[in-house]
Image 1 (spheres, helix red, strand yellow):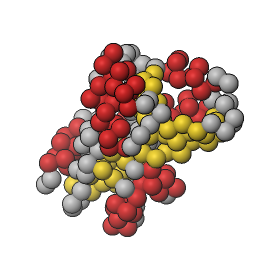
Image 2 (image 1 turned 30 degrees about the vertical axis):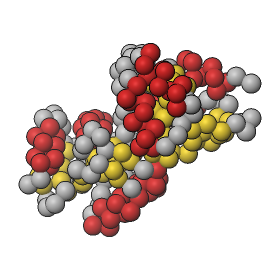
Image 3 (image 1 turned 90 degrees about the vertical axis):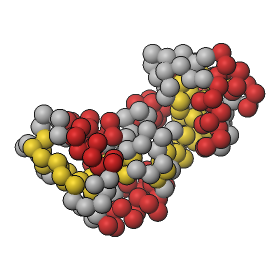
Length: 213
């Protein structure tokens, strides 16, 4: 049994409404829930999940309900996200899977670290469209025609390394948005952003920036 399957099954079995959870070969698990349909999930140990990989998992497991990227470092490309959502397959971290099992919304679940932030961006009247390039990168077009590439940084107190790493992995951004509601970017993170050419912001500052003429 693969290492990520072992740890995922241990945690899944702790959920109060789970009757059983078993590995059914490779990365796949079958979860039986009390008073709910069974769940079929793939628990991947990949560092990055792209569209081709998402399709491969789905082809191999046509009844797939949820694709889990078990590693905390796992990055999801936009093509994979679009494919999974079009096909009614939930996606995200291990924590997302555990929460979705409890809520009974496995097939519509998305990465819990970013879902709220994506929702509030889409609700702004000044936003015309949002394209998900990566799980943590949004390509935002405003109604005034302005275009911004926004990176979501989930660390409690982002450091300069967090900003530089996001830039290196996902490419140049205009704004590094510290989405942790309780955290504050360090001065080093703000300075690193200025050196790279992006602003480091919390939500209220970002909201005002987007709504400015």
